[in-house]
Length: 150
Ligand code: ASC
Image (cartoon, rainbow, N blue to C red; front, side, top):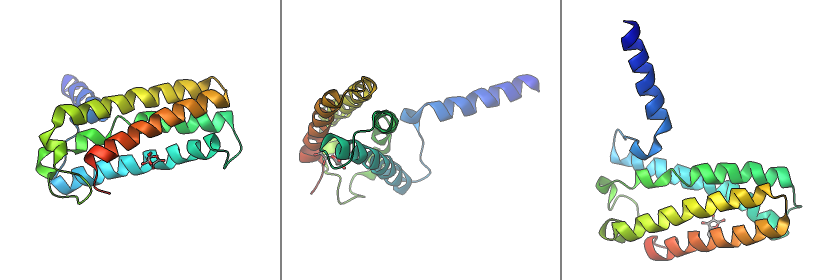
């Protein structure tokens, strides 16, 4: 009994800790999941962008707080691009499923860039933040240019 409970808890914790293996009840949920993660990421990335572009005052703590969310969110959307969602969203190009290796490269590039964005935010230096923001934005754009309908 105790063993079973421990096993159940371990399974639940594993499920929470492994977004890459997220399972979706239906294809529409996978689309909603990836769009939600991308939406949250864009909100927080935009707040960093406002500071990087001088539209908002530089606040070193806010930069770190936002970059932490961006770096976490960057890991999530890709699990939602399941094969059974090909054609469900007008925005996602079919090339995502035809060029899986290339798509994955873009995903991994973003995870790397957002990790470096967080590291840059932690230096408390606006110039470092600006550089890392531009690099990350270029990576967002490159993937959009290749794989997203405008
Ligand atoms: C953002 C945002 C994106 C990217 C992209 C960069 O702030 O919401 O999708 O930057 O516009 O080109």
